Length: 342
Image (cartoon, rainbow, N blue to C red):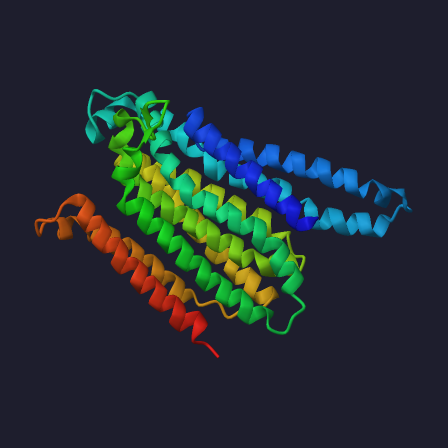
């Protein structure tokens, strides 16, 4: 039943995401709407199957324990909401003179928000991978936490997650131009309208930001296992503070890129803070150097693209060569780090 519920949740979540983003032209809010609908349906089905369990005696101690564990998720969720949505507010509040200096007088604050939101859609590919991982990861680490091999298993999972994230990063970042140029059959429109392509430079930065969010989810295992969820509001509100401060500082200098960098900084700091508290509560030999190595490799290959093109290769051929080199390197690193470990 658990597997069926989780599978159904993922199917509804992903299906709604693709429908809202591709069919109805929603932005990042599609992720929240899809997650809400999928969660409500899952909760309804669970309620139907668990009605008999509510016929027992009231347990005040258990209620206190549940509240201590669950209540911190409310302010933590608030912090996450700030991280996801506040950037549009600051972009919309950009002074026209700043827009003129960074872009041109042809753009308004609404145009900048529209371009940013449209290009944000490509980062959703990484976010979907992260959310799919989260849905499978949380029940898995709770089941495995009592096993003697759990720390090693969690470490290997972290490395394999980085391999998957690096693959997604390389594919979306290198082939962003081809992806946005895809025409939707029957509907006859581009995946991202041509007038929004001016913001494609923010895509790799946002992909890295959500990659770090994946780290955050990986490292949350120790917090859940040790039941120290009181740390979560502290971490997410620190992240929200970084997002707000960085947007205020960077947007006047870099526009949309400043907002993307603020998101990256926030998720990176949150990931490292939760790593500190998580490994103190439940020691896991995470291979951070390998994780950072994969990030640097993937980002380096992407930013090497103009150099490869300068040798006379087409944009598509350069992307294919770099993607192939990246996949081969990631596969080798994963094999050495995970599969060759005795």
